[in-house]
Image (cartoon, rainbow over all chains, first blue to last red; front, top):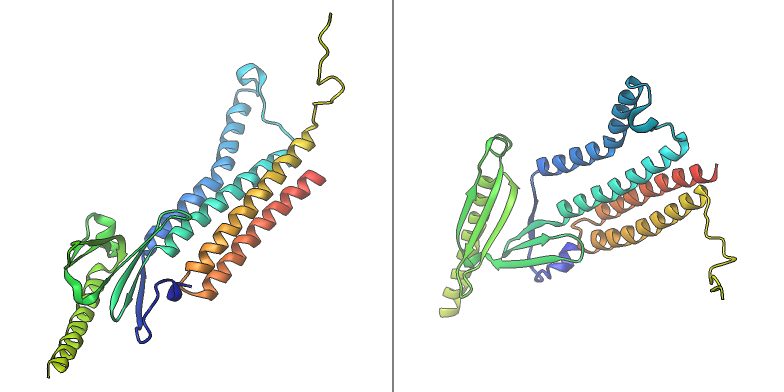
Length: 192
Length: 76
């Protein structure tokens, strides 16, 4: 599971796991419901058009196939949509930031068998920026969060559609300060 | 001299029910492979074992119900 994957240290504590905002999941759900209903809508519309034209559209083409066969293909479509929905859920569920009392682990799941895992220690945190742009992100309180770290690589960690970016930023900065105090104390103790 | 047709004697025609059965079998294989991949990812990388296990059961359950309904249409 996640805890084994991020190889936590013996006394390291997992504080928070943050996934994308629920609205992103809602968009996936609405999209897949629409796709699932699309053949029914198309069938209904086509039936109306052909009935109005006395079922003689384009050389007498009709859509009066056997009901069982139509259901078979509709169920096949539903199965494909169900798998598509599962892919969306996988993307939502496995794409996350795991915040421990020592570091932040950013996991970016880009489809199956494509996973990027990066982490930085809280004492290396230099700056955090948040970006909330647009009507819906402002109303629903989600946006991008970006962490800049000190070090040779000058890495940047960025995640989109994170819920409550201000609160998340405050939590991370508070934990980074606490971590800094602990690190400084240990350095002082070592110096004595 | 007439060239013999190597395919002569082989009945290449397939009934509509056979085509539906083949489509169904292909979908069963695709769903099985997809489910194995999903289960592996959720159970390996998920944050909660219960969520991952429950999600996998729901995913497979819904897929099996759809495939059984399709199979019933082919049979009956």
